[in-house]
Length: 163
Image: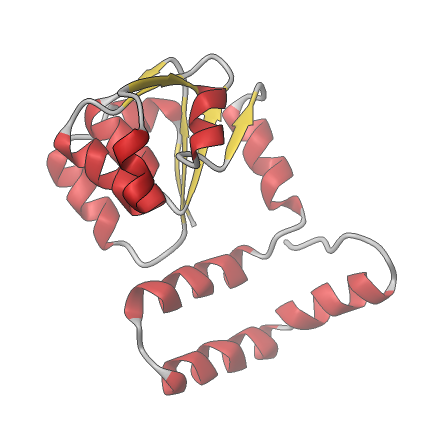
């Protein structure tokens, strides 16, 4: 899993965005303050996009518009160029809005999720590798015991804990 903190998001340039889009693992991005340009594009292209409550999203660059289209398709035609975090959530441009610090939010978000399974799913989606690749990926997950942890927690009526 690749995590982009607000500071890392602000520091991205076009080559870094290209490298980010070429990754096969899950990308989680968090934005705060004014998020525009390449930073907005990276946030919008991330697998899971989070905005802090104080954030303002600016879709003010061609790359950011491409990310908006990737997220909401034709719905991008109805988007405003500037919106608050809650407006971005309502529009489908981000997956969560939080008032928590990035480290705290990430720790809570991953607590009951298997990072191995998330990375595997992201790689499968990006690769379009077919049945053989899917079978190999699922065999790997079963060999690691990931599904058994989730099933055991479900049967015990608790949330799974992954390390």
